[in-house]
Length: 555
Ligand code: GLC
Ligand code: CA
Image (cartoon, rainbow, N blue to C red; front, side, top):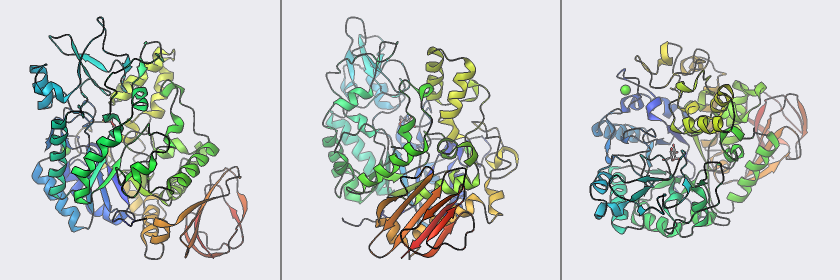
């Protein structure tokens, strides 16, 4: 395997709107990010991923881009962006941005021109199609609910959108459109960006016949992902994209890919794959409901453990995936993956350790490093997220009461990750002096950065040690390139694995159970590298306390 510059990096995702507000308008901004670069450096971050900061009407929080070359006024100016880039570089950190090119905003100039001339040049930047007998061209349901087809005013045409109707899909079959996108990608890379997180990229390939599928719900529609799963040929687009952009810059790319086909992984993340890496969502998919969030199964420890292990074993044959506990689309990991008795700082440290030391590129999501949790939501009106509103509706339609539907959304909402970053115990958690755009989690007096800075045993200080171990000269190689091997997979409550590079053998072992467990060690211990319970001794046998995690160097 060829070594790449990004293999041993630790990444951190910033959701700019909720990170740090410096002008009191209740919205995080670029100045706020600049002011926290030292904080990120101290955590050990190498690569910062910014969720979209482009000009946008924010129907889907910036994932609806109106101008790929402009910074949203809410966040700041291009000068401030350049300053951020320079300040990050000064600290030896790289910046990557979100690349949202499956769709743009309906406010984008291209779409406005297409609407003005529905048979003209720009209509071909999108999918404009005639309806079928007074109906839309096909029966697809968009990810955010309702038909994927929206009438083009004044015509008998519809345009295609897999997400909100304000996010028209771009026509990748059109070479002119592709060239416009490549120019834009290169423009940012020329500026000094290290790469991109690439949004919903598997969706760019459409079946141009747009065939109907068997309806899968009472609305008579079928999830549009069925078309995505059944169409071939996305790889050609992805190679074209890479050849014309990323490869020339040796960029780091991490793609959001669902619905990959069996056996395709090497094409995506192999030595010369379409991308540097893709996110591993296998554990997150465990709570995919059949019809929506309302029938999402709870996380079962053994199933979760097996899923993570299987994925690691499979992925290491081809390359590296990016490991996450949470992101801006997922509820908080501590609330989701841990049982009630573990939703505390010991649990947060344990979950963080087993995740960050997996093989792959760790991505920490803002607030994860202080153990942020889901918020308490009192009414559906408190949510902002477009997807949460849709899921509430789906749950109500399925017969759940208002209270039950609220409970579902409280558990699964994307807004759980989007509540403002908790910097201190003062008003609004120190995020803003104004009114925050989304409410602050009421637990901020207990969980915040300032408090944890002062506490050597805090989640934050533990995360700092954890990242430092991963990146230390002694252990960097084994945690980057070492093979993954499951251990204790037949126990009821222990998640354990070895990382082994021929020289060093590391054991990561955690007890997710309520009671202590006795474990035998296959290899004698040389050194306790990390412990969330201050353990000083470990030899051949080990009694692991409830919620205890250890990182051991073995013989
Ligand atoms: C991705 C983003 C999500 C967004 C969607 C549409 O899944 O992560 O936040 O809503 O794409 O762009
Ligand atoms: Ca602001």
